[in-house]
Amino acid sequence: MISRSALTCLVALAALASACGLTSGLVPPPETSVQGRWWTWAHSADESVSPVRDTTGEFCDHDQPDDVWFLAGTHGGTVQRTCRIPAGRPLVFPLVNLQGDAAGCATFMAAAEGKAVLDGRPVEPERLDEADVTVAGVGIVHACGLWVRLAPLPAGPHTLTIRGSSGTFRTGVDYRLVVESVPQA
Image (cartoon, rainbow, N blue to C red; front, side, top):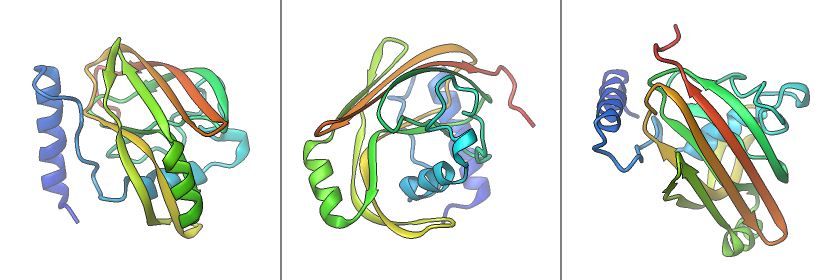
C-alpha cells in the first residue's frame, strides 16, 4: 500500500510533468486494483443516478473518490456526456470491461478492442486480463478489460472519445470534459 504522502507527491509530480508536456499521460493508480476500485464505484450508484446509465454526464460526479476521477462507459451503445472534473485528479476509465468468471473473461478478452482519443491524440490503453478483485458490497469477482489511466489534465475544456468492443458488444462515449482551475475542497 502506498503511503498518503507518497501518493500526494506522485500526483503532484504527475500534474507538473503533464502541465510541462513531459509525460505520455499514463500514471499508476493510487492502488494496484484499479478494476476493483472502479467496479466498487460503478456499483455504488443505484440505477437512477448511475454514471454508466447516464446519457448526459449529469451523474459523472456521483460518489467519486478523493484521489482519482473515474469515467464510465455504457451498457452498450454510444452517448455524449459533459463532465466537470476537479483539477489535480488523475483519470481512470475502461474502454471495454467485464465482470464475470474466468472462462467469460478469457472469451471476452480474446475479442476485446478499444481506443481512446484525448484532444485529438490517441491514448494507449493497457490490457488488464482476468483477475480476482474485491468489489465493496459485492465481494470477490473476476474482472478484465482494456483500461486507460491519465495524469491530471490541465485546467480548461478537453474532448475524450472512448470506443470499445468485444464480440457483438459495442460501447462508446464522447466526453466533453471541463477541468476546474482550482481543486475543489
